[in-house]
Structure formats: C-alpha cells, structure tokens
Image (cartoon, rainbow over all chains, first blue to last red; front, side, top):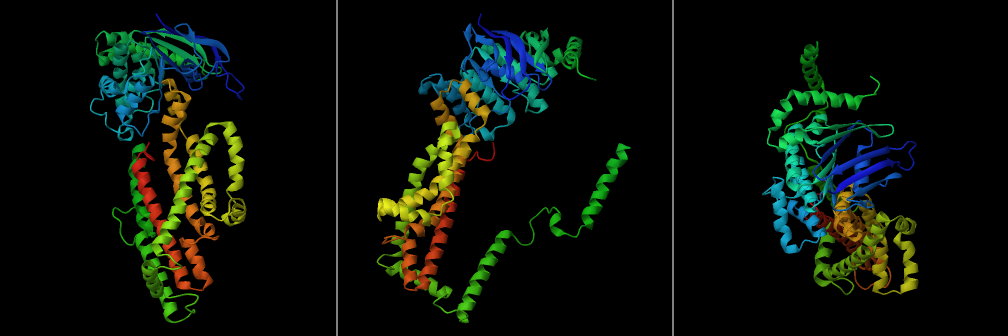
Length: 257
Length: 286
C-alpha cells in the first residue's frame, strides 16, 4: 500500500533562531485521514508543506510510495485555506485546468470536470465565475480541482478555516464523503478540535518551540460515519465528548496556565 | 450591570449625533443636496464664463486669449478646411497612430521586462536600475539624442513616445507579478504545472489587472509626450499643429489644439476603463 512518509523531519527557516519543526515522523497510508492539530507556531503547516514538496527539510526525509519528495506533484494535491482558484476562469474551467495539466484530451475535460463538480455537490455551478461563488462553494471547487489531479494523497491546509460555522459543518461531511469515494490518504491541518475528531482516523498533536509531536490519538469517529452513522449521533455520543476533553488537554499540555 | 450599560449606550449615542451641527458627519439614507459631479460641472461652466467675459471685455488682447467662440469657430474651420496642409482629422489620426504604435512597442518590450523583474532576481538586477534611470528623464531631454541616433523620421517620434511609456508598463507588470498570491502559485505547482505553464496560465492572468493599469498610465504618459515627439520635422499631428500655429501667433488654433488633446485623453481614459471592466471583472472582488 502506498504511503506518504515524513521521517524525522526538521524544518529550519532561514534567518530564524529556532527550528520550526524538529524530528517529526508521520506516516499516512492510503485510506488514512491524518489530522495535525496544535497551538500556533507548532509547525503544522510547515510539515504539510514538506509533504507537498514546497518546503525542503534541513534534516530527515519525505517520501511518497518510496520515492523521495523533491518538488510539488499531482500525486499530492494541495487545498489551501484561502482558495487558490483562478478568478478569470469559471468553476468548470478551474477544474479542467487540472485535467489539462494531467494530459486529459480537451474533448473530455468539460465532461470530466462536470463529474467532479457533481461529486463535490456543485452541479449546475460550472458556468459560474469564481467571484460569484460563496466561500464554501469556492472550497468545493478547490477540492474538485485537487481531485482532478487524481492524487494518491490530499493535503489540506485548513481548508475550512475561513468558513462560517454552519458551512464548515456541512463541508466536514463532504470531506468525509470525498475521502471515502476517492480512496485517498488525507493529511490535514486544522485549528478545530471538534473538526479533528469528526474527520480523523489519527490525530497528531504538535507542540511549539520547536514543533514536535506530543501525542498521537487513533480515533474511530470518521469510520463510524463511513459505516453509515449520522454525524449528529456521533457528536452526541459521550465518547465523543470524552475524546474532545482528552484532545484539548493534550493540546494545551505544558502550557503555562 | 451589563444590561444597564447596554440600554444606556444607544440613548447617549442618539443624543450626541443629534447635537452635532456638522451636517456631513451624519449618515443620510438618501443623497441630498449637491453632488461632486454637479460641482465639477459648475466649475467648468464658471471657467468658461470667466474666459468668455474676459475676452468680451477685452481684458486681454485676443492675440493672447481668443474668445471661446473664436476657438469654436476655428475648430469648425480647421475640421473642414484644415490647418498647415492637413485637416484636423488627419492631425488627430497622425498623432493617435504614433501613440498607438508606441503603445504596442511598449507592451512588446515592457511586459516581458516586467515579468523578468517580477519573476527572477537576475531580471530585477538587470532592468530595475535601467528603468529607474529612464523614468525621471523628461522626453525633451532625450529627444535630441534620439534624433542624432535615429534621424528625424517617423521611427524617432515613435521611439520617444515608447521610451516614455516603457517604465509605467514594465513597473506595473512587475508589481502585478510580485502581487500574485503564493497560495495560487503553490496550488498550480502541486497540480503539476511546469514553470512555463505557471507563467502563462497563472502569473500573467493574475497580473493582468495591474498590466492594464500600467497601460492606462502609459497612454497618459505617451499622450503628454506627443508634442515633444512632434517637435522635430513632423508634417502632421496635433503637437505639430499647435507648434506651427504658435510660430504665427495663431492663438485660437493653439487653444483649440490643447482642448482637442485634452478631449482625446479623456476619451482614451474612458475607453480603457471600459476595457478593464470587461476584461478583468474580478479585479477588486477576489
């Protein structure tokens, strides 16, 4: 099974006294949904950028299916917090752009793009310009575009961070549906504790100064959703509240009260 | 306690605002009174009236300041019969032709230079000092050199205007390129875009609003360089027309030429703003 592996990765940005990340190892197998949480400055985004090939680690290595990661590539499509879409194109054309980069013949692109837009529940919005869409709809286009690359792994950098609470909740189930449908491994960064619990199969808690792993939780709530249980029922489960307490404690552990 | 402070606040606020005597500090539901546009119209009319009145009362000799009516009459006459061997339309076409030829040249050179400045450190190192050197020099200063080098033909005139347009086009392009969001670039890279595809499909369109602004500024700069460019050995053009008229103290043609130049600049600005709105409707609403 292909794996995305960060092995004892250290990141040290030029001109900064302390490293941003020190000796962090993370494995994401296909089918995993790994969520990185932690306080500001714990290096979550740095780690995601290492996996994306946008940041080079000073020590340690990153590899995907055994191949070392040296540059960004369509096998690891990234979705950012602020949609990085092209406002001069329509929603459909944005998705088709990714298909074109993959070498999909021009005749097939529109049809395939519409399929992907349907997958993210945006059917009918294909002709809309990006600036005519709401924040949630834009993130859906961003997801459809990332999936157009047919990645083995999805890298999500706070994709729901800029959305309002209600849209965010709806997008969480969309993410889970896509994860199940596309059969990918996901590495995601978030600030949301509940979001991490809902989505993850594994939660990696990082602490700052320098960024390091303090705890890893294996969680099963997203598998329960995939098995058919309603999201509200899962959130109402006392086990969910208990896990939330434990995760919150882990995140704020060692912080001066 | 928080309840009382909440109930008290709006009352004091209302009192304050009603006590204010400055009328424009109060938000008004509907626009009342006079608009800026109306004030502008009145200003223009006032200037025209002062002009007409001073000509009428002969405060200034008509050799220095012909009346508005004389200028208008001249406009009609020159439009019909021409001045110095060409009709007004021919002068306008000659000038517009030079400015647009220069604009095309400035785009062909300036946009790639701007891209180079925005994308690569070496490009910035090469072109930044050159542009900063060229930018503040008035066209009249390099005009003689251009004539010495390239003669007195049409290419020299176009070149002078092009030089004036180059810096605004290149610098606006560069600032547009530098302003492209890193996330947008990273997303395209992660989808597998090559360096060329990145420039062609992400950076250039992202910089387009800024490039168009550069074109608008360049057109203004080029248009104001026109008279200088037509100083030497021109036989047609608005700048040439004004200068020939000035040599014979035909002041009404001089004033008419100035007004025509101003009117065309105004129309060009309007057209290019229209084009901007049509071409980059996303600008400012991302």
